Length: 189
Image (cartoon, rainbow, N blue to C red; front, side, top):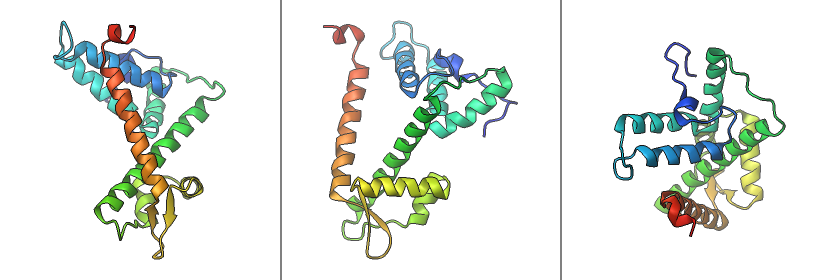
């Protein structure tokens, strides 16, 4: 967990409200990165770009952000809103991140060793660093969706549906990155 001793206000650097959504955080990051990047800015500022990148890296993972929010609250006195749905949004985003990490790990394993694609549950659980109950939830969800299965050896492997899902996610992510990279005036046509 970050400490108060060397506190940096990442929300201020990204010019967002600490209660903002993950989507708003990402949008602010992309906008500021374009503003300061030497290849895209009228007045590039590498130092500010580095600050923006570091701030986004510190907040983009929902668990890291939650840990940072505790320090942020203690240091600044900011009281995070108890808005209905804010906790659920962060939990759902954290779950989605975990599902993506599991699927990407199993996808890589399947590509590298198609006939021996299983990964031990213990290894996946350690990678996620979550409670047993949350881990069971992730496995239940991914199995019910048909994205993963248990092998005859008791390990976990990605299914054909899981591979298709990873490919679809990758395509969507690539399209979003391309859209974010376009100048605003091109998007308004």
